[in-house]
Image 1 (spheres, one colour):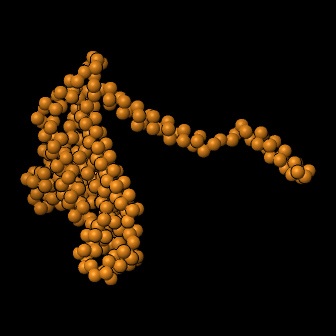
Image 2 (cartoon, one colour):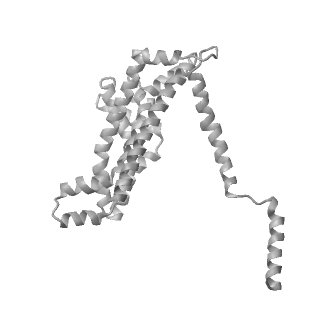
Image 3 (cartoon, rainbow, N blue to C red):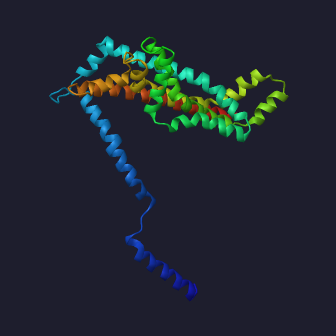
Length: 283
């Protein structure tokens, strides 16, 4: 090794020693995120878990579990929430898929303008949008008459963009040469859609279902606003039990039931997406 190279190595080592006090690794960047998760995710979860399986005296108890699954009202609220979420999700999917498909096939300048029309309502304050739709329903004399229908309309109005965007993002990235090849091989447009376009858009469908189904089960502000407070969903049930003078233990167990439903939904959709990705790789 020449003298110049030895000198450079020694300079590098000395500079490394000098900067050793202020040097940090990439792992250090994870510390704020880890602290955030501990404070605002892990700790609240264990707090809910503690309240869910304890009594007012702090002793371990299955009282809340027995109350929930033996109460017809609680089970009805849970069933209504799931049904409302499924209806909202299906209506959003039926409306959003043609919109996303048409947007994905349009020219870029027109496509951008139309896409903004669906995104812009998301920039407006949620309360203002809720009040505007409430006044519109009042104009058609629907308030206090069709509470469940009004709630579905409000849910679809608020969550439709969350179904359009993931579908559009997936459809715009699809390989159109597969559709052209299928047409050249004699398939009609319906067969091309069912065999190629629809399977390729499944990741967007699953993402949209997750983004619409889970929030629509819990957004009691919409059900209170459009349903005149007569449509009870599980989110409203949690809010009532956590209110002043209510039972935090029972409210925590209801929240835990909702967390389990969310976990199972996410697990199912994630496994479905994994199966689809594996199938696409094999093909």
